Image (cartoon, rainbow, N blue to C red; front, side):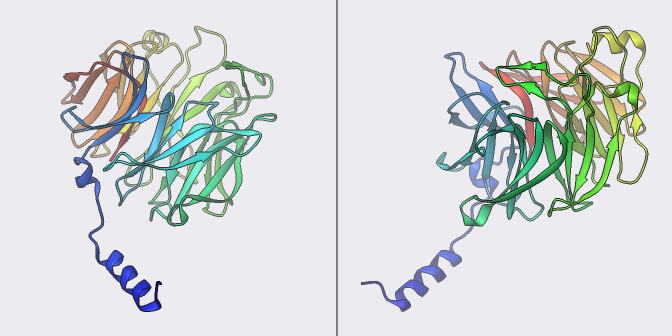
Amino acid sequence: MATRRGFLASVLLTASLPQLTWADAGAPAYLGAAKEPDGSFALFGLSAAGEDRFRLPLPARGHAGAAHSMRPEAVIFARRPGTFARVLDCVTGQVMHDLAAPQGAHFSGHGTYSGNGALLFTGEVNNASGQGQIGIWNVDEGYARQGSFASGGIGPHEIMFSVRNNLLVVANGGIQAALDDERTTLNLETMQPNLTYLSQGGEVVDQLLLPAELRLNSIRHLAQAADGTVAFAMQWQGEAGVVTPLLGLHRPGQSPVLAEMPDMLALRLKGYAGSVAFSGDGARVAISCPRGGLLVVFDRDGTLQTTHSRADICGLGSAPDGFFATDGLGGIARVQNGALHMLNAAPRAWDNHLITL
């Protein structure tokens, strides 16, 4: 029979055990989801040199995810309109928790941990209205759901936590998509994307609306620099052949900078930026454009620097001296000193996003 003394002893023993870190999972520099040649799906840990550190199976296609800052745990989300999010122990491969989207809603494909790792925030979309909400999950209580609050717009996609600003940043894409065809937009006539900054309690602290002529430019993906500058990548939902900015830079309370490109380059990108990342030193920011097979690098004021060709390039992460990238053909590359260098070619198709650790 258990005694109070025995219980306290077990608690003290557990507390004294060394806590596992990402080093115990092979010290990966990046996480990325991929499709294997046999049609199965998995999450991979990758070194800075593009080598596999681990492989963990997934029940279906994984889109993006979030990594805990202190523990070797990661949550990977189904591609929208998916309803699963899987929390994985990246040391043992154990499925720690399977999270389900609330009834009548689906996950947006992205999520983020709070600065101290105590909470997980998930982007969610109401199936009927497209209205966005942010789900709140208590990590230390077994990822128990604590509730939700409004995202500040229609169709939230990527969300991230800004440690510098102590705020959630939400890319409300403005799109109400058909559930049976995610590429069909139901609300083009009323579409209005925004970039919203929220407190951890759901209060809108700041909100950026694009100019009226850009209201069909869906704000989709996010990155942040150490000084709190937010980069947002956009995807044009209007007629093909329109020259439109695909990268914006913003700080709360200030006007955005919309990066410009020569018309011929902009047309090659086909109105689609798939991912965005800052370089490790924060001096540059890049967008990937899989439809155009291009990675485009800008400096911090939005001035075009370099372009790099690579078929189906999309996954993008920060590297100390540049960027780390993956593509749908299995390629893994590094961009540094103005050049793209291939690191590895894996026998798999990388999905759209990378998680930088």
